[in-house]
Length: 445
Image (cartoon, rainbow, N blue to C red; front, side, top):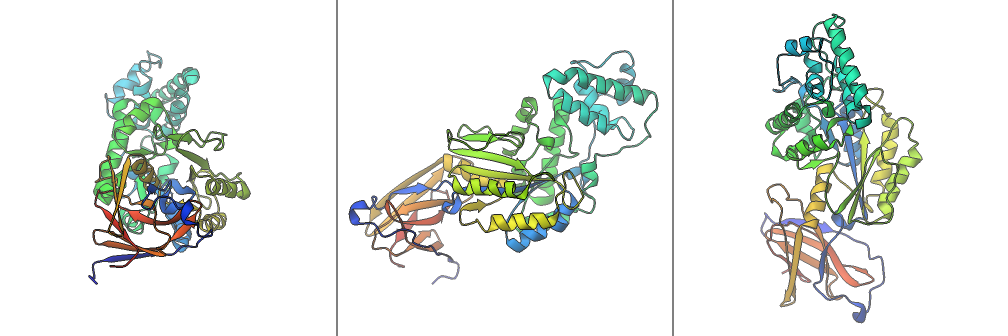
């Protein structure tokens, strides 16, 4: 047989008795499974900020267990990066001078907040972060203005030391290199953007938001390749509408929000749990903190494993005393083993891969026919195939006489064992949504 042929042998356990011919679903009937490999749910492990301890202590655990994850990294803090934090706008000296006579208001807040970290002094970014957080809530806008007035008053009074000091999240990346990230990417981990400086974007004007996101994407493209420019997380998990509109145009998938009509989102701040389904999918984000009991964290996984519609997106930050809400790697080890032990019911995949799978399924078309004792299936979707090229899992009902099925798509061949459910005998197999036909046969040739 031709050496270029790739064989994928999928073993399966027959869970129910073989059904009678009268119960058999029409041979050839094909559907796309809700999740890859026919799992009940999906789980994505995601890390924010690129803290060096994530790679020193958490990644080796995942390597040992062979489970993937997504790392949202701050690109400007990595040595060798071309793009770093800066203010795009008027000369900051003019802004500082103007602040002495004109109080901060709706008309000038975004400019002053955008410039706040780049006034030429250390310690100013803390004020920017606080002000942006307050400004994100309309009822706290006056407080945001007062924080900016205080910042500029202290700058004029010479209360800060000259220089530039990034936020703590950038400093926690110390030791991380692009060479490391390329290595991790080659091992199946998704490296994604968390902006250039971990900027508080509700406090930035449109030009500076775009700079933080576009140039971070460009940095990752140049250092890693286009494959890693699919996903992003706007820092602090903001869902600010103005920020999201800009970010949507730059990244295909945002962990902050994915406004799909078929997806219900429960973010980290939500106290809701997946309830009665009203959409095809639920993205359920949970952020483990130092006060989160491990049994509760395990129950999140159980929920995704039992339901048919839930994508559990886990959000981690610090590890082993470094970073926000740092968790000990010993606890992560136990937790990840718990997830791994349920991989027969949950699909463990990167954030980007799950987002791609759902979108491909929602935009896909399946056609099937029978002739000469074989089943032909065609799978295609309406999305950009250069970006959405993840295989989908198909479930095709076959003759009860077929105990083993050979599936061909071009030069790819899979040999799969038949299973049964209440509807009849079926096989699960992987199909690339290229439109290239798949041929199913109960015989090898």
